[in-house]
Length: 182
Image (tube, rainbow, N blue to C red; front, side, top):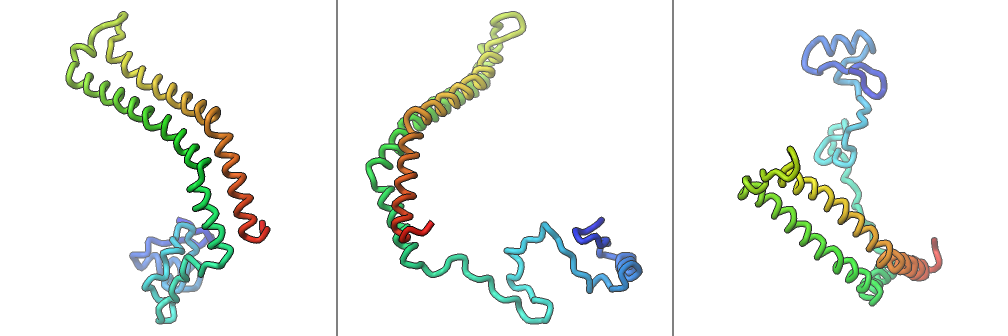
Protein backbone atom coordinates (compact mmCIF):
# COMPACT_ATOMS: atom_id res chain seq x y z
CA UNK A 1 0.00 0.00 0.00
CA UNK A 2 1.35 3.44 -0.88
CA UNK A 3 0.86 6.54 1.23
CA UNK A 4 0.26 9.97 -0.22
CA UNK A 5 3.99 10.74 -0.13
CA UNK A 6 4.98 7.57 -2.06
CA UNK A 7 6.47 5.73 0.90
CA UNK A 8 5.32 2.18 1.24
CA UNK A 9 3.28 1.30 4.27
CA UNK A 10 3.72 -2.00 5.91
CA UNK A 11 1.00 -3.64 7.89
CA UNK A 12 2.69 -2.30 10.98
CA UNK A 13 2.34 -5.51 12.93
CA UNK A 14 5.42 -7.55 12.13
CA UNK A 15 9.16 -7.52 11.71
CA UNK A 16 8.85 -7.56 7.91
CA UNK A 17 7.32 -4.09 7.90
CA UNK A 18 10.19 -2.67 10.00
CA UNK A 19 12.77 -4.48 7.94
CA UNK A 20 11.13 -3.28 4.72
CA UNK A 21 11.23 0.34 5.88
CA UNK A 22 14.84 0.05 7.02
CA UNK A 23 15.77 -1.62 3.74
CA UNK A 24 14.10 0.96 1.48
CA UNK A 25 14.54 4.14 3.47
CA UNK A 26 17.28 3.44 5.98
CA UNK A 27 14.94 4.46 8.83
CA UNK A 28 13.04 2.36 11.31
CA UNK A 29 9.25 2.44 10.78
CA UNK A 30 8.62 4.05 14.18
CA UNK A 31 10.58 7.11 13.00
CA UNK A 32 8.66 7.54 9.74
CA UNK A 33 5.72 9.94 9.68
CA UNK A 34 3.08 9.55 7.02
CA UNK A 35 0.99 12.29 5.46
CA UNK A 36 -2.46 10.74 5.62
CA UNK A 37 -5.11 12.79 3.77
CA UNK A 38 -7.88 11.07 5.73
CA UNK A 39 -6.38 11.91 9.11
CA UNK A 40 -8.79 14.08 11.07
CA UNK A 41 -6.60 17.07 11.78
CA UNK A 42 -9.34 18.88 13.69
CA UNK A 43 -9.76 16.06 16.18
CA UNK A 44 -6.06 15.37 16.55
CA UNK A 45 -4.14 16.87 19.39
CA UNK A 46 -6.76 16.26 22.04
CA UNK A 47 -4.79 14.61 24.80
CA UNK A 48 -2.03 13.47 22.43
CA UNK A 49 1.60 14.37 22.87
CA UNK A 50 3.32 16.47 20.22
CA UNK A 51 6.25 14.04 19.91
CA UNK A 52 8.41 15.76 22.52
CA UNK A 53 6.60 14.20 25.46
CA UNK A 54 4.58 17.29 26.28
CA UNK A 55 0.88 17.50 25.59
CA UNK A 56 -0.08 19.15 22.32
CA UNK A 57 -1.29 22.74 22.57
CA UNK A 58 -4.99 23.21 23.01
CA UNK A 59 -7.14 23.87 19.97
CA UNK A 60 -7.96 27.58 19.73
CA UNK A 61 -11.58 28.52 20.34
CA UNK A 62 -13.82 28.51 17.28
CA UNK A 63 -15.37 31.87 18.10
CA UNK A 64 -13.51 35.05 18.67
CA UNK A 65 -14.71 37.86 20.83
CA UNK A 66 -17.55 39.73 19.18
CA UNK A 67 -16.69 43.01 17.60
CA UNK A 68 -19.23 45.85 17.50
CA UNK A 69 -19.78 45.31 13.73
CA UNK A 70 -20.65 41.64 14.35
CA UNK A 71 -23.18 42.58 16.99
CA UNK A 72 -24.79 45.09 14.65
CA UNK A 73 -24.96 42.55 11.81
CA UNK A 74 -26.66 40.09 14.16
CA UNK A 75 -29.17 42.77 15.09
CA UNK A 76 -29.96 43.26 11.40
CA UNK A 77 -30.88 39.58 11.03
CA UNK A 78 -33.04 39.67 14.15
CA UNK A 79 -34.79 42.76 12.80
CA UNK A 80 -35.39 41.07 9.43
CA UNK A 81 -36.72 37.96 11.13
CA UNK A 82 -39.27 40.09 12.97
CA UNK A 83 -40.31 41.99 9.83
CA UNK A 84 -43.67 41.61 8.12
CA UNK A 85 -42.02 40.64 4.81
CA UNK A 86 -40.17 37.72 6.43
CA UNK A 87 -43.34 36.54 8.17
CA UNK A 88 -45.20 36.69 4.85
CA UNK A 89 -42.58 34.56 3.05
CA UNK A 90 -42.56 32.02 5.89
CA UNK A 91 -46.37 31.98 5.98
CA UNK A 92 -46.60 31.31 2.24
CA UNK A 93 -44.09 28.49 2.64
CA UNK A 94 -46.00 26.93 5.52
CA UNK A 95 -49.40 27.29 3.82
CA UNK A 96 -48.11 25.13 0.98
CA UNK A 97 -45.77 22.69 2.72
CA UNK A 98 -47.86 21.65 5.74
CA UNK A 99 -50.95 20.54 3.76
CA UNK A 100 -48.75 19.04 1.04
CA UNK A 101 -46.76 16.95 3.50
CA UNK A 102 -49.91 15.89 5.36
CA UNK A 103 -51.68 14.83 2.15
CA UNK A 104 -48.66 12.95 0.82
CA UNK A 105 -48.09 11.22 4.17
CA UNK A 106 -51.73 10.12 4.36
CA UNK A 107 -51.58 8.84 0.77
CA UNK A 108 -48.39 6.89 1.54
CA UNK A 109 -49.70 5.41 4.79
CA UNK A 110 -53.00 4.56 3.06
CA UNK A 111 -51.10 2.68 0.37
CA UNK A 112 -49.04 0.72 2.91
CA UNK A 113 -52.08 -0.08 5.07
CA UNK A 114 -54.11 -1.17 2.04
CA UNK A 115 -51.25 -3.37 0.82
CA UNK A 116 -50.98 -5.14 4.18
CA UNK A 117 -54.58 -5.13 5.40
CA UNK A 118 -56.38 -5.76 2.10
CA UNK A 119 -54.12 -7.89 -0.11
CA UNK A 120 -57.17 -9.22 -1.96
CA UNK A 121 -58.17 -5.70 -2.97
CA UNK A 122 -54.64 -4.83 -4.07
CA UNK A 123 -54.45 -8.07 -6.09
CA UNK A 124 -57.63 -7.18 -7.99
CA UNK A 125 -56.76 -7.29 -11.71
CA UNK A 126 -57.33 -4.07 -13.63
CA UNK A 127 -56.02 -4.92 -17.09
CA UNK A 128 -54.17 -8.12 -17.94
CA UNK A 129 -51.34 -8.70 -15.44
CA UNK A 130 -51.65 -5.18 -14.01
CA UNK A 131 -53.42 -5.12 -10.67
CA UNK A 132 -54.63 -2.39 -8.33
CA UNK A 133 -51.51 -2.66 -6.14
CA UNK A 134 -49.22 -1.99 -9.11
CA UNK A 135 -51.25 1.04 -10.11
CA UNK A 136 -51.21 2.39 -6.56
CA UNK A 137 -47.43 1.86 -6.38
CA UNK A 138 -46.91 3.70 -9.65
CA UNK A 139 -49.25 6.37 -8.28
CA UNK A 140 -46.78 6.87 -5.43
CA UNK A 141 -44.08 7.78 -7.96
CA UNK A 142 -46.44 9.95 -9.96
CA UNK A 143 -47.62 11.81 -6.86
CA UNK A 144 -43.99 12.42 -5.81
CA UNK A 145 -43.21 14.04 -9.15
CA UNK A 146 -46.48 15.97 -9.10
CA UNK A 147 -45.81 17.32 -5.60
CA UNK A 148 -42.25 18.30 -6.57
CA UNK A 149 -43.54 20.16 -9.64
CA UNK A 150 -46.24 21.90 -7.58
CA UNK A 151 -43.71 22.93 -4.92
CA UNK A 152 -41.28 24.37 -7.48
CA UNK A 153 -44.11 26.23 -9.22
CA UNK A 154 -45.45 27.61 -5.94
CA UNK A 155 -41.97 28.75 -4.91
CA UNK A 156 -41.35 30.40 -8.27
CA UNK A 157 -44.69 32.21 -8.40
CA UNK A 158 -45.34 33.08 -4.76
CA UNK A 159 -42.10 33.13 -2.75
CA UNK A 160 -38.93 33.51 -4.79
CA UNK A 161 -39.32 37.19 -5.70
CA UNK A 162 -40.27 38.19 -2.14
CA UNK A 163 -37.42 36.11 -0.67
CA UNK A 164 -34.93 37.58 -3.14
CA UNK A 165 -36.05 41.12 -2.26
CA UNK A 166 -35.76 40.28 1.42
CA UNK A 167 -32.27 38.85 0.92
CA UNK A 168 -31.19 41.96 -1.01
CA UNK A 169 -32.53 44.26 1.70
CA UNK A 170 -30.81 42.18 4.38
CA UNK A 171 -27.47 42.36 2.61
CA UNK A 172 -27.80 46.11 2.17
CA UNK A 173 -28.70 46.58 5.85
CA UNK A 174 -25.80 44.31 6.93
CA UNK A 175 -23.39 46.21 4.72
CA UNK A 176 -24.61 49.47 6.26
CA UNK A 177 -24.27 48.07 9.81
CA UNK A 178 -20.67 47.09 9.14
CA UNK A 179 -19.82 50.58 8.00
CA UNK A 180 -19.91 50.01 4.26
CA UNK A 181 -17.40 47.12 4.28
CA UNK A 182 -17.95 44.43 1.70
